[in-house]
Image (cartoon, rainbow, N blue to C red; front, side):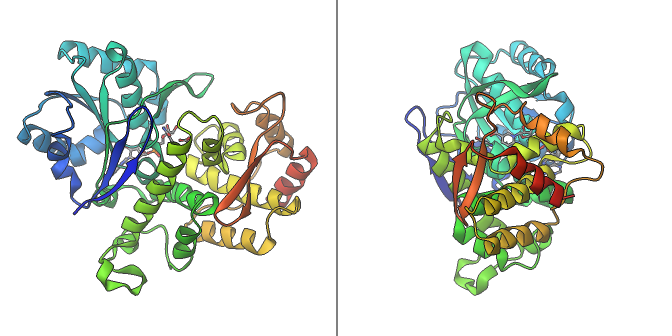
Length: 375
Ligand code: NAD
Ligand code: GLY
């Protein structure tokens, strides 16, 4: 049984389909979507070793003619050289206008496959099969695709929506725990910016970073649901992202709220060389900072800030700055953020659990004070 969410956009609408064991139904799910016969599957060795065979078998059994491109694993390979490899495979295998690319992997593979699909032959169709929690709840939905430039993350890209997002929660069993926690930071983000019920449901859980706990059936006492916490988390998070993207596909306004916690996160990630702290950990630190800033500005109640920070800790995520980081360097790095306009740093600040406000009126002294308290 699939749970489905619709992403309704003026240009192209599509479905997010969530079901345990869904990978084996990939081919069937793609049939009927006018995706052509030829499929180029893009993955990396880590994911392909676990799930490549199931994906290929399912696609072939459904009548697709499949070729594949396996790129090296890691954010450091999210670049134009990897895109060239996808183009080369497409050329060798005569991938046509009517053909489809399929991304099988985390956000790195998803963003690159989407970008290759957006540009090959001026744009062909693509399908997202996200395998990390972060890709399931965030990267695979919404059509942001791209690669990194040596000078900065995601500087090259295009908006290109997938034709289908197929989520099989079972694949999370092999995801390293640190990656699970990284995805959970984005889930907590949705609770704070959009979905107070999701937030409260997570508050009731004992553990937010062990997949066995998250996959145990019948949470919340309602046995008729026969769902696990992870099913619920995926549904509510994807719904939140779909709601926001449907209202503002190209980030003219509202979509910016998805960057909650990301202003300080980007500074922390770049100052720690993108290795010491991963993206989810940086977002957790960024959310704590944004919450404290909102409280100091009188926008958010201290009691709710505390509830957010407790949830972040329960997900095994950090709430303090990494040792050795210089506060003034963080303040300077904020000026390099992609979203800085006329020298003003933009913050997404909560006003209550489930609602935020976008502002560029945060005094540097308040940021400095909060960062000092977070050492
Ligand atoms: P990732 O793609 O690097 O995956 C993390 C690690 O987990 C990798 O080593 C991967 O091989 C491994 N992995 C993935 N699924 C697995 C599984 N089921 N079992 C075992 N190992 C598995 O990183 P990520 O956190 O998924 O995504 C981060 C990327 O997503 C960044 O490049 C970021 O810019 C991008 N992103 C994009 C958007 C968007 O809207 N397009 C949003 C958020 C993040
Ligand atoms: N992850 C931010 C966005 O999709 O807009």
